[in-house]
Length: 441
Image (spheres, rainbow, N blue to C red):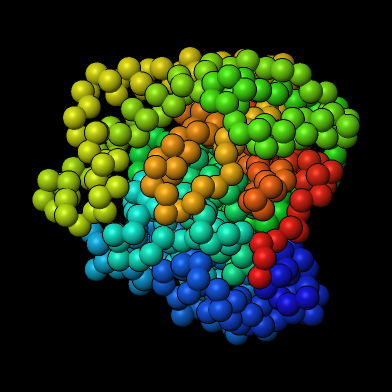
């Protein structure tokens, strides 16, 4: 097995046993990036990463010498943080973002800045300084966004892990479309200093990996603390609430996606969990609140550029940002006040169950060059509720469509119950057997 095929946990064990050198792993990942990136466009900047100094160092932990890709709205000292935009081509970061500082202290190395939708909202777009990332399962298709390059890079084995950000699902969307694991932890658990904001009260930074264990390893470094203690406890005794109305009535999913979610519920029950239906407020309620807050907060960030240099944005980015400039303040206040009752409804569900099972995307990835299909399918998802409420949510692979594109599910836990979330996700991952499935090539 080539080093780039190893998971974070596998590579970490080999490095700790002195059977794999960090410099060897990095070189293999760099070669993989050089080979695949001209087709996938996942990386927009190759960084001068060097792991030779780590070869002779006592391993610091499971991330020692592990290459981690970085979404290009996250600062790395001395490097541009372009946000995939003409507005920021001349920007250079003065310091590492807090998550980079923490990962670097754990021994991680950073070989590339990865593609994003412009400012984590405008994409996929073809009128930007860098081309959009493509889906490694089929390069004619969308990889999800806005952490598009992170999803494509991890799924294609360019890097074993990557950082993304998530304001309305932007870690979990590419995880869903690329067949990997994407985690949005509890709001506030992972620091956001040094990350260009989209909407201050909705933004999260999250790990994107090929396995649940790898996501837990990354989160331990990013947030501090231990999240793996229940990883292998299995599903027996867990109470799972199946929020089937999200994908059956609120936004009916494709037949293939609906069948995959039903199969996940069956597997969870077969492994010893008790599964029952749970009703939450409708997806439309959550989406309206998320959208209003996002418009208002993003317009406060982009107001000067929208007035002074609108031509530097992609057309799609302008269209997505401009509504916030015309949003009355009372609408933002109303949306902010509505968050409390929505969070209360989810918290009430967690008094009856330990984990929620929901859809993530309602459809497999569409073609990237079909603007109408992108606009239609992008909001067809069940991720935004948990940006509104702040609960931890994890997306992972649940099969392949007839067209060979990943299907997915989402699991959600109470606030700060990430260890419980990882337990449920690992139990499903083991039972389902999709872990290790890779795109062609």
